[in-house]
Image: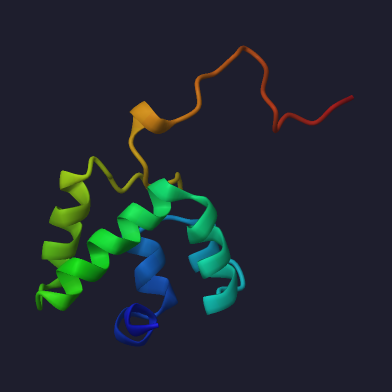
Length: 96
């Protein structure tokens, strides 16, 4: 809740690209997601620790970068090594 009060949902989403910060964000939906996804929880915890140390937005980005999290435009913020491997089938392709 402190992070939302300090940054707002838009800035949180720009720092950590997870959908629960962008699409109808709420504390309840975010906590539910973060409880199930350790990689996302680790990113938010890193951001929170940097915030508690009195850092700037750039220091937050550097802390996330040390975790291997690169900002990738509209893609998720976790590193390529954590991206699912392509199997030759696009699960998002429209079926005919």
